[in-house]
Every structure is written in C-alpha cells, then in structure tokens.
Amino acid sequence: MNTAELLVQCLENEGVEYIFGLPGEENMEVLNALEHSSIRFITTRHEQGAAFMADVYGRLTGKPGVCLSTLGPGATNLMTGVADANLDCAPLVAITGQVGTDRMHIDSHQYLDLVAMFAPVTKWNAQIVRPSITPEIVRKAFKRAQSEKPGAVHIDLPENIAAMPVEGKPLTKRDGDKIFASYRSLGEAGELITKAKNPLILVGNGAIRSHASEALTEFATRLNIPVVNTFMGKGVIPYTHPLAMWSLGLQQRDFINCAFDETDLVIAVGYDLVEYSPKKWNSTGNIPIIHIGESSSQIDSSYIPQVEVVGDISDALNEILHRADRTGKSAPHALELRPMIRADYEQYAQDDGFPVKPQKIVYDLRQVMNPEDIVISDVGAHKMWMARHYHCDRPNTCIISNGFAAMGIAIPGAVAAKLVYPKRKIVAVTGDGGFMMNMQELETAVRIGTPFVTLIFNDGGYGLIEWKQQIHFGKSAFIKFGNPDFVKLADSMGLKGYRIESASDLIPTLKEALAQSVPAVIDCPVDYRENLLFTQKTNDIACMI
Image 1 (cartoon, rainbow, N blue to C red):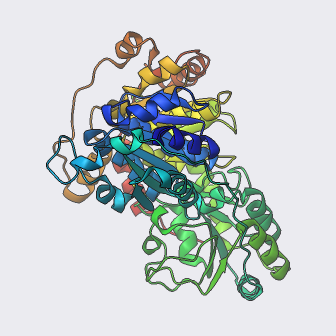
Image 2: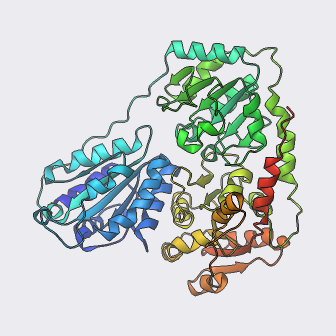
C-alpha cells in the first residue's frame, strides 16, 4: 500500500461519497487509488466548479464536501470555492497535488507554496510530509472542517510522498459530545425576554447547521415573538407562519428595518456577523442583544450581547422557553409590518410586463417549487431579489453565497444538490454574467445524469454593479457585454433550451423544464429598471409602527 491508497482508505472511513475535481499529473496516485474505492470521483470541467460542488454538498449534508486538484494553476483555480465555503461556514476538505519534496527548495515547474497560499482561506491546512502521518492529517482535517463554526480545510500531498509505501490504517472516528448552555445564562436570557415589550428574533445560518428549526418555531410561537431571517437563515421558520417577517440583509432600507427601529431586544439565534453586519441594524449599538449559538459571539462595536447563551441551540431555546413568561404581553409592534410586507410581495402575482420584472420571476418560481425543492442563487442583481422575495418553508432550500458572495456558484451547486437529493426539483438561478463563468459544468451535469433547471435573468450586463453605479454616480460604465444564443447553446450541449417571450410564459415553461430528464436552460429577459425604482421606494419608507 502507498500513501495515496492509505489516504483514500481514510476518506472512505470518513464516509466520503463523492470527490469533485480534475485529474492532473501530480494527483495520479490518488486517482489510481480511487478507481478501486467506494468513492465516486466526479470529473468537472474547472476546479472552481469542483470546489463549489463540494461547498454546496457540505451545506446540504453537514458533512465535508471534498474537492481535488493538481498543483499550481489547478490549486489556484480551486481557491475561490474554498474561500466561499470558509466564509459561509460550509464544511469542505480540499486536497491538492504537489511537486515532490525533493523539488521544493528550487524554482520548479508549477510549484507554489500551497500551504501558505491556502492559509488565509481555510480554518486549517497542512502538507503530508511523511506517509505515516496520513491518518492523523485526514482525521484532523475532517474534525476541524465540521466543528463549529464549520469551514474549509486543505491537505497538500507531494507526488513523491503519495507514491511511497506505508503501513497504517484510518483512525477511529468519534462524534463530539454536545455542549449545553449554563443555567445562569439561560436564566438571564429568560428574564430579559420576560421584561421586553417589543422583542425580535434574528435567526441565521447557525440555526440551520444546528437543525434548530423545530425548536425555534416552537419558541417563537409560544412566546409570540416575530422572527426575521438572514439570507442564509431562510426556512428556519416557515415563511407562511404568522410570526415570520421574512428576510433582512439588503443594503437599502426596507420595511423590516422599521422593526429594528422599534425593538427593545434582539434575540440573535445562530447569527453569524458575516451574514449581515450588525452595523446595518444596530448602528448606535444601543439595542440589547441576547446571543444564542454553539459558539461565543464575535467582537463588533454594534454587537455586544448582554447575555451569551452558548451551547446546543435547540436545547437552549427549550430551556429559555421554560424561564420566560410573556403572559399578558401585547403583540410586538413588528407584527404590524407583516401585512405591508406581504402586500408588497403579492402585488407582482399578475404583473404582465415584459421584459419580466425580477419580482415576478421570483414570485412565479416560488409557485412551481414544492416546500422541499431547492434553489441555488448565484450572485448579482437577481440575488438581491431572490433574497428579498424567495421565501422558504424549510431550511436549506434556498442556498445563497453570502459571506464571500462568489459569482459562478449556482450551476456547480445545482449539480451537487441533485446528487444529494435526486428526487427533488433543483433550480440554479443566475444572471447572464454568472452563467458564463461556470456554464461548462452543464456538460458535467449531462454526463453524470443530474437534471436541473438553470434560470437566467438576462439583461446583457453586470446588473448589480450598474445598480450601485447609478446610486453613487447617477450613471454606469463598463458593465455591458454580449451573450451567445442561450437556447442554441443549450441545444448544442444536449440540454433543453427555452426562451421566455412574455410574462405568462414563465410558469408553464418552468413546469415543462423541470419535467425533463436532462438539464434545461431558460433564458428570461429581465427588466432591471426595477432596481432603481426599488431604491427610490425604500428611501421613502416611513415607519408607522
């Protein structure tokens, strides 16, 4: 047995199902070992796509997604997806090939110090310098990737080490024990909630990672406290629940900001500061905060909790529920906003404008997706509309790149989502800019049999940057580009291609595309004049609660 074969045995021991990546000269020993393993290697068309697939696999399963590249340019291509996973707290293990240790002291073809390069974008990374330490490296990598807060780790394997003979076996896995919050913090949290007149729950991605949806919904319902979610906290409480206030996170002021103006207590549950800066909702630092999470709060002048409840989130919510008494309390003022928020959402249901308004596209998409179906949103102007208007019944059914906000995640992410949930409908929502960054992975989808729909918001430019330029300068520059014929492109790749010609086309086209046995692409012209209209509208929002 050589080191590469031992590495693969260790990966099997960790329960790895898939490795996403590209073959290269310096990872040949690993690929040879994978041929004889239970792990399925998914050959992608670009290393960035491989990393995004591992990223989304990690988000959906809670288990580290694994991606593999060769050295040099292969590794640098991998970095964007690795950084995305790390900032969005998705467990991921990246493995890179490397030159032999006998070539690292001299200028060598394609050599980079990958351990140094990956250090800023990972929780931990290391090089296997002796065959015998492989089991320790792999076990530590997976443990660090999954421990709260989850993130990316990196293993670098020199080609001469990979080929060396070794004796060894994988280390025994042991699940860590849950940590529970202190009685003192639980009691203090209960007291603050009891005294508050207008409390507000802010729920984030940590609640999804901790599977705290049921406990959070029960907590909010019994205490009659409205719930606001971050972009990455969608679905922790069903969007149809009467206490659900939907999403916070836009740069512009929105209805929900009025609730933060009036609140006298924010209960932050599984909230990571990277999801939406507290300076946006607590600029003066005066709002009292209870922090509930599996790790302590981060330091920020606008986020200084009066109480930190650190431990298993579901248990903490259940325990606080027994210590808080809101009997006789009137409903928080924030609930007065809900009819306005819903009316703003529903007004686009029958809109027949063309090109199609982004609000209408998102509204219609929601109508054809079942509660358990999954959308993967790319980054661009459409992401703002997805974040604001695509609401979820269940956690992890709207995946948004938020911390790193990396364009190009949607299509590779949809490949991974379909592998994890082959019976669910999957839609990659992307702009025409993001589509062209990783559309090559549609060939991967055809080849491995993962049908999903790619819905393109087509405006012939970088719409989000144009939006911001118009706000700051009253004009735009350098944001327009040309596109291929997306329908012909889809047909040439063995996909199904559709073009929307009127607003009424969208729902029937989505239904037909989702029924296909091959991936489908829908080209939908979008009216991004709505971007500036939205900015003007939010500037005029007057809080009446």
